[in-house]
Image 1 (tube, rainbow, N blue to C red):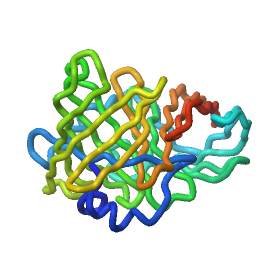
Image 2: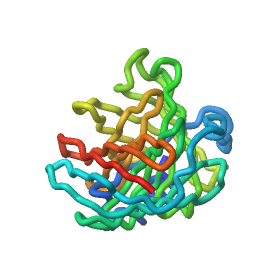
Image 3: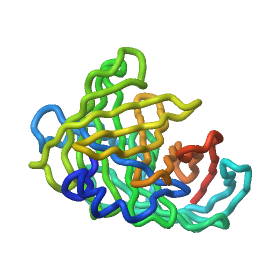
Image 4: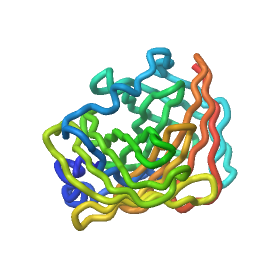
Length: 255
């Protein structure tokens, strides 16, 4: 699923592989998923009309990085792209640094992939289907102008998220595109390490499971992160994980 990272996963390497990624870490890229017509918007039937709109400026009431450092600041959240995609751009200004990210809203959660000082970063969100045998996903990245691609992964093991999947994907804004790949998910304490193989390129990400959802932050290199906010009107609590870091960060925000 990487927009082929801008027209083809291969392009991600060409156009992207120059910048670091991250939000404290950003993610690595989605790359595959489609099962049905290439342009089918599988994300639309996930939408829950009761979801909270997170747009606005939020204050970080409590923040703790994986290294134990406490931080304060603000998070600005704005909707981008097609409203049906429920995609949001996030901008953190904190005492630990400034970061940007992308996130999808589903089931009262804002599920985010983000980057630090990153030109390129992305987010992939999968609905876990058939007890883990199938993942239906959508994804985007910072250079996609709010467009969303799709990815369908099949071949997993019943009752387990980890494993190897075959994927079919489309690029953001290019519903006519379709390409195959392989997705590997490996547990890492309470998070997951994710690897996509598409054409001759390899991409990596870090993921969190939240109920029936699996969100991955990704990007080129090894600097990327993932975050899950539980939304409750004007309050939200989040946990976040960084590629290669064992501990989680935590965040509480209000608006």
